[in-house]
Picture 1: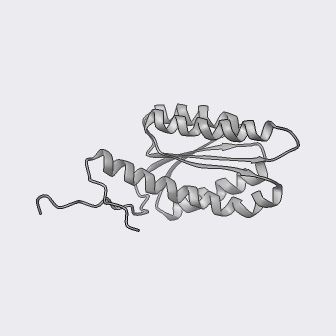
Picture 2: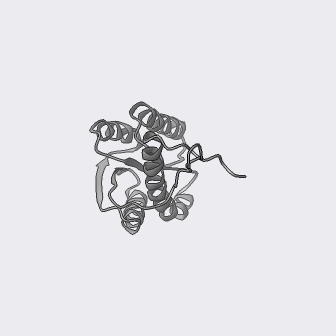
Picture 3: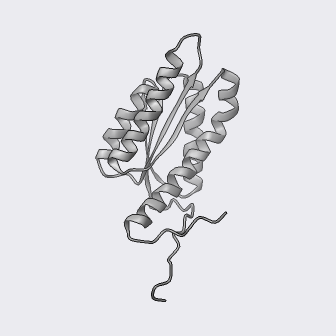
Length: 162
């Protein structure tokens, strides 16, 4: 039908997608659980082409994401890390700068990035969130990869419904 709106389907079908994951090693028990949950969910969604790299900490995640994005091979990327508040101002610096840099990489490269860098007050909060956040990031990466591809292909976004 001519002139009719074509809604963009945001289905969670990962078949054929190439997803990259950058995981910070700092707070490794938590970031490993994030990665396991993320990879398991990606595989459940049909993603079989997954690259997973490790970096020392959250501040190193953005440079690895940028290098991966610039290769032009990834449909979406996932940032995984865990920053737990300590007794110094360092928590704010690392939290704010890593988040800002992940967003800058996403906007500069045009590759969607699911940000799964946890920022918590304590270990207990991180432990509660690690499995759910890893899986959430997988779903976000697949959804945004599909949405981004649809928009770039010229599909017209459907208005949000309230």
